[in-house]
Length: 172
Ligand SMILES: [Fe+2]
Ligand SMILES: [Fe+2]
Image 1 (spheres, rainbow, N blue to C red):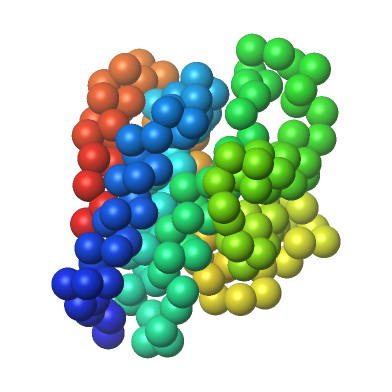
Image 2 (cartoon, rainbow, N blue to C red):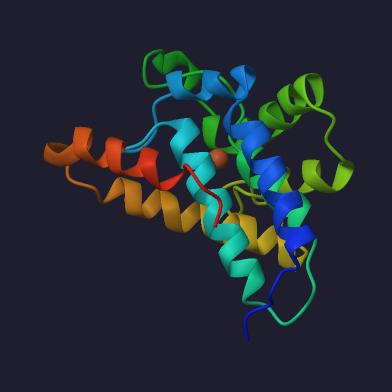
């Protein structure tokens, strides 16, 4: 069963989404390369779209705003380990807490959002188990999008980036 949103709820989520999508601070994620056919900016908005889609399929009423913000900021670590391999060590387990401190510095995020970001790398970050439905949705949406990006052929990378860029232009 899909939960339907009121016009007011939909508009509120869209306002949040576009405020991040068109934010110069968030634009910096475009310079962070990701898996094939993506960058950190595109990756994060794709995760946000999928997480909201999945959250709306749940019977339980979830905190959609926190899911949305945490998904957008889950990889807000702002460094590119692919261009500086020295940053690769412990990247998998450390980047969620770096993303949280950057997000706290640049945006007014709640503790709930911070916790959702911290648990998105489970089980790599084994101590941060995603305890809530919201946390599991963000973690699973990230894994699914990362897998799709990873499996993308190198040959079509430019085309994929273009396609994915157009996919994130709207939340719904
Ligand atoms: Fe991540
Ligand atoms: Fe991610």
